[in-house]
Image 1 (tube, rainbow, N blue to C red):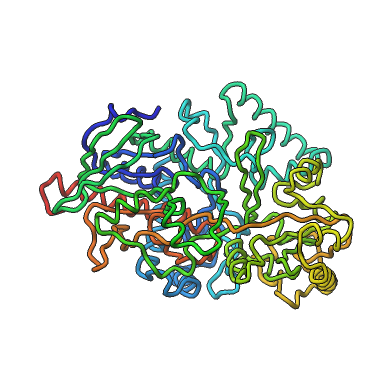
Image 2 (cartoon, one colour; image 1 turned 90 degrees about the vertical axis):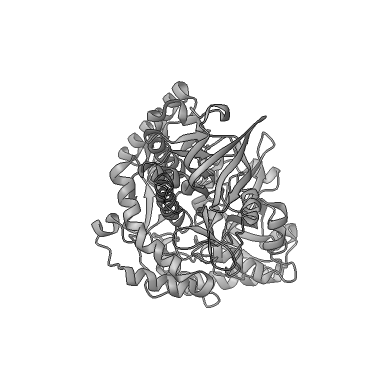
Length: 576
């Protein structure tokens, strides 16, 4: 179980603030170096936004890529990032990530319970750029039987309910493929029966499912690794102040409920709190207008650690192409009054028979582009306030086959979604436009053009479905273009899409060792950052799947190793 603040020691080699993938990685690697490690989480759960996500992990050139025969190299990866990101981030820091990534994955898999796999087809998003690949760089965590965690299972942040079935059963892409074939395939029916049966037994024994997938699997595996390595873990504990002196940052004051305690740090303090995005003034200052009202990310990234880092001399970068990473979201109140925020990643926007339009009724973007570029296009088109929100439009056939947002494939039981306004239905396009308050002539023209493109297989307006990445997110059974389909089966449906921030791209500026820097370029001894607290090496660009989690894990490891070496030097009386 997690410790009480009154019971932790006064001295640690490394203290990590934040327990998402980056913070957990930092704690694990510091402990593997022999350091005394304290991992501090301000919320009641470990995992941060990672636990909500698929936990796709973009780390190139690993053993998994080699085993699959990926034609990749350090030069190819670096060149791809140079072309994708350019001057929006430091090339030397990007290259440090590329060089270190392979060894980080090797160490995790060889020495801990953290395990990954690669898919034979998982392309980079900016596939049109030289150096992009269709597989090998994006890893995903193996499913995990969390019964090994015992009571620690309840420390992991539960997944987003709308991404589960049966009130909490987590499913990944393999599970979904089988579930969709219940009654049609004996193998899939048996698989699904075992999956569901195991889940209900877990609910009786443990109060929740113990088969973890995606983000929960990664955090569960990391938690088990941290426990085995002797990492001390505090939850519901916040940092109030940093202790600084001639040798940089040497301590932190923590508060857990009514208890405060000052902790001395010999090696380093690593910030991994998830970025600034829930900080009210930083959010208003750095994000575009209108400010995104809805975010599918976890609640812990308040940005308060950035305020403390500023007092130590750190500063935010200003080179990012976008201040954060984006996804279009829809929202709906749950029965308990909480707000469900659903990120529209790939399951609907790029499917045949679905388009997106602004208030003028016209398409404004290639719907099959990455979620990050989709929202960037929303803001670019919104100068007159006409594209926030935008409208995802589908006909009855597309809704039934692919679902839309929180409405799952099959289109069953849509009445509650119609009743609360999440979904809008109309017998004709004109009626739909009237209900939404958008231009009917524009909508009719957009649908007519799409219907023609569906027949020809060529989107003359936005070239939808022309890259490997885009076609991968379509329907492989549909032709001639897997992303283009007609909208011609009444009734017609719409869901409103809003900009949603899924992680900060602007962060605290650091060097190749993840040490934070002052504006004069000098390092702040003993102060590090990883994850969204660190200025993104992707520079507000989204080149491929998992480009937040991968660097978070790698720079967590880099920071931890450097801080652990500082602790060793301090014990030997050497210069810090």
